[in-house]
Length: 336
Image (cartoon, rainbow, N blue to C red; front, side):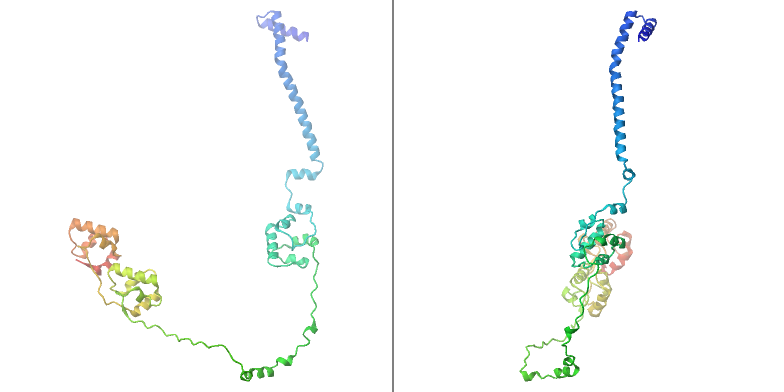
């Protein structure tokens, strides 16, 4: 210790301007400065040693058997878990879903079994459990020794003497014929049954009618035309100004082919159609027509304002307000 102290004093004296007394003082101060750090380091080393000892002790306790180590490294399989279950004798007619699952039965199988019991199915013998649809054989083999039911159920023996008193001749063909020819009038038999008289079906006679003046009541007489279809026909007819051909009724989207064929048998076109003067009609009149509508009506009025009255169909085509197909349907309703 003296040698170290002397060497440190000389080192400080040679490399600094301190005196020998001052150098000794520096050595003492340095010792007291580093003393707490040395104490903390020592305590830490001691705590690390204690932790290592505790870990070694725990590992030794956990490693008492190879199975304990395997459990820490990987989870147990289904077969291992089933082998560890403690199953007590049970009656399958009295278990709940949770109790079946506690014995290792899968949830969907447990629900099937409980539903079967709720629907009055009764397990009478052990192999009745195997009759459940989808119940695995290996699952039944695992549980059959714990089922609290007999292996087999004896059937009741057929009693031959039960129907020994049955007389075959009592209901033979001869007796039946006698019963058939039995005269009820001898015993003053009276019947309370009254025979009902039903009117014979008389098909409706439908008179032919004008399709341009017919109302919904007239149209609903036609087979296949109901109230909604009749309203559709009258609305389209009134908006167009009448039908000039029966084929125009095909524009009704809910009119079936069979109903159209029936309509052709009775419908006629007698009243003339109402025409629209393209040069005098206002916006409201034009937009109501099914072949013009609001957009085309606005274009037609603007074109007439810029170029004057329409004189022919060619002038309407120049406006490009109406497509060729719609214009062909509209021509019979126009006048200039």
